[in-house]
Length: 141
Image (cartoon, rainbow, N blue to C red):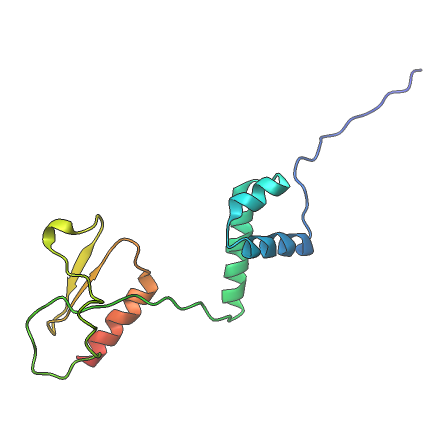
């Protein structure tokens, strides 16, 4: 009787240790968040690194780590002056860009509040920060 070799299925997935994942994510952070560079350097799929980064963020939030704050620039667009005290000190005249309806960016919206205040944001606004600003302005009215 002849000897036979039995071949099983080949495992295609690599198992990564927590230390290896942490080292790769630290490398991404050191590169300024450039996932593509790290993925190419190590011959990995970019999506794998994005998934690990998202899982790290979710785990940090679940453990109660504070979420980084993002500030949204706010300016008063209305020229009408109200008698009530302003909520914030008025910005310098040269720091608020003057816009007209014709030069609005794609995805921009203007929000008019009941107290007369108006906000203009574009599609790049951070939703959580905008929500905090709107709650604060509603509470101050």
